[in-house]
Image (cartoon, rainbow, N blue to C red; front, side, top):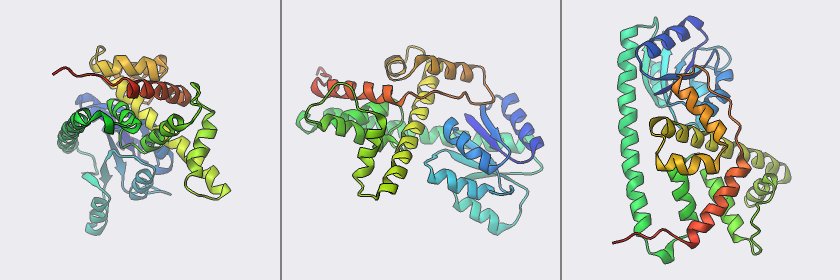
Length: 301
């Protein structure tokens, strides 16, 4: 499991890290001493679980969770707190908190809670994998005449584990636009033009178009960070994994993927800052999707 710790108490953060690492329960991908400083790091490192203090100055735990959800974070939360007030605890559970860890921190309690939450996480992940497999099977058995470029792109994004992420719809819309052009030049236009094209379709004002273009850029960038993390994890588990072998070197800068893999293998406490080449990703996806659409794989009976 990949954990991120948010607590204004340095001693609490240190104890939680020690319990997780010594118990071989996962890796710490980052930590922060406030909700404000945590948001960007959490979005970029995309942990499985965020251990977050309820009471913090400026932006408390619940407010931080709300901000993260608004920006597309889909990980799980475990609340850390001394608070015994039933109303506050109830409000926290309404915000999709998995469990509470009570202060002062107790090693046995932490290990028990993290074991339960990791088991739930793996079960949900297994069910999601089964569901995706069924969707893939349905897509493969669909009549070829009903197959669209959108189906092809979704299949590729699904291989990277990013279908449903905040920027996946933007990526699909960009490829559909590129394929729909009459001249269909092989090279894609500047990213700024692509983002503005998507924003203009929403019939916004000039100032809103600029704002939405930036939002599209951020959503896509964060989605690609998740894809890179997913592929790096696959590579660590099995270097010969077909998805890893195909997508990691083609769609991304392989040196960046390799750096992520090293961080995972060494159980790095701080996430590696990644360079995300969005243009390369979209260029390769555009060419790859068109090729697979024109020449779909054949399945022998």
